[in-house]
Length: 265
Image (cartoon, rainbow, N blue to C red; front, side, top):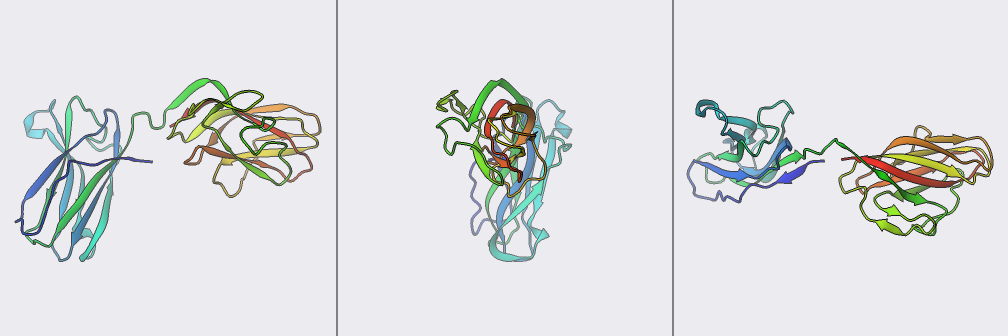
C-alpha cells in the first residue's frame, strides 16, 4: 500500500574512495514514511550504510538532524549480486510524519573503501495523509443486475458468484456510466447498501473483495419469493476496485443492486 519516492540520482562507481554521498528526497506534506529500500552489491565483508535523515529547521542546530531509518548491508551474507534491503519505519519514529514546511529529507550513503561495492538505488515508501480516511459521497448506484450494463446481468442463482466493479456511477435503467471513478484508485473499502429484489425463493448473499476465493459470512438474507430487502454494510475491495457477490446454497435466485455512499483510502 505504499507509494514510493526516489531520491535524486547519485552515482557510486568503481574506484571512488571511501566517502559519504547524499541526495534530497521529495515527500508530500502530511505523509507517513513506512519504509526505506536500498539495492546494493556487497561482495566482501565490508558493508554499506544507508540512512534516511530529517533536518528540521525549527529545531536548534545541535539537534536538528534526526535519523528516520538506517540500512546496513552487513546484515546479510556477502554476495556480488544486487540485493534488496529494506527496513520498516515505526509510526512513532521522529520525522516519520512529513512536515514539508519545517523539515527536509536526505538519503545519506556511507560507502566502504572497497571499490567493488555499489549502491544501485534507494526508494522511500510512504502512505499519504489521506490513507485510512473515510470520504463520504452522495449515494450512487454502481451495479444493478436488471440493467444491460455492465455485463453479466440477470438473476444471480444459487451457488454462483459475480464480480462487480464499483468505481463508476451508473444510470438507473440502462446501467451506462454517468461519472467515472467516484470510488477512486487507492480505495480499500466502501460503505454501501446491498439490495435484493425479484426473489424466487429463500437464500442469502455474501460480499467479499473481488479476488476472494470463498466467503465466511452472509451480507443479506431473505426467506421467500417476491421480496425486496436492503442492508447497509462495509465491504472490502480488491486492488482493482472489485467486489464479489456470492449467492448461497438455498433454492432462491435474486436480482442484485449495489449503491455506494462513501469509501476509505
